Image (cartoon, rainbow, N blue to C red; front, top):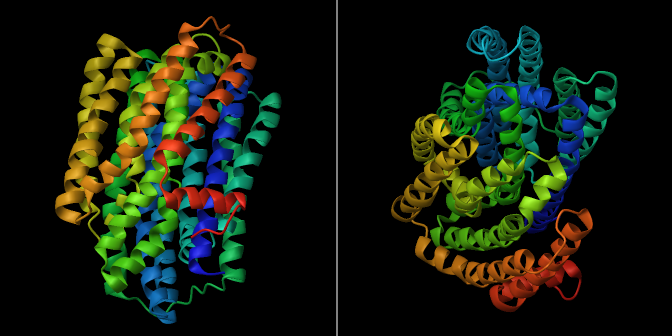
Length: 507
């Protein structure tokens, strides 16, 4: 299979995985809430927020492994390909020990910080969950090398296929186990077991199908320095991401306890699902962007790819954003139950500015390839700290909505203003042409959203039933696609859709 075919199948299977992820979460979250209760769900989300910081250690080498392995693979340098994997493997062993030591420290700190917010039973359960999730971090960390190998070889079908199987089986096993033991601890044990099985399958594929070799050719100080140097920037961004996305829940838990965390977490499930749509494609293009930059230094082609991928991401993001803006209030009540309207507002407030980052996600891949990712880390760490300050201030006045508004403000400043300036001035991307192209999609669809929303809320429609919601959703999607095809799509995008539908070959 050619590289372009691999990328095309990679995009398709990635979106299949994304759709499965969204559908699973839609079914899984309300069932999990009913099976373990709102407080246990809040504990599960809170411990996940704590562990997410240490998960960022996973990025210390994973990004570097992918970059150097791709570079040596392009030059057919087998010895350095093998040595990259072998050196990274040894570094991960040391990091695994460090991870567990850090986890012990986190458990001690957690017990002290939340001693007055939770009961002693909740504190003990959270401590056990943190240790289980710490082991899960080690499993995920050591599997990052295998994921890098599979990605470098553009075998996205297996990569996303194995992840999809894990995605579907995990909630099934969770729901079965929580019938016997309805606790958040049971959920974390299943998460660990499924991730370990997925890691074993990917390890087998990398070693036996792709014939990846981990042969050690001696310690290469320059390579090790390169792995750590490049990846240290990635972990700065990842750590800033975790502070940005997870600190809200930690602050809410500190001030208000576990139950409000559950409400905020339900809203976060929606914008996290939204995130998967926007970020799905960029990883598929990492090897291709690397080739364009390192071989041809063709910034014009990279800029054109940036716009092309951005438009496709925007079309998908707008469908979700517009549908949720109009139908989301009804959906949240039907899906999570009464008392979760605030979760709808939280999700929508964050999703609007988040769209800028999602449709420009390929820009982050371009920065990684160009080894300019450190600026992203500085920006995100700055707006993450701004978000912490704003959240503490606004949370006291406006509650959960204040926490969401603070995130939205910080996101618009960082992703909307600063990053676009950097893409234009420092990277050399045609940002003006990018946004002009995006407006061709946004203007007709925003007009459609306004008309559809007015009809849905002003006409005498019986709200509050799944039948009404599903029928309205179907009408919305049909209308959205009609406007998209008639007023927004260019010829390439029309031919792309037609080729997938089997009407004619893609031009």
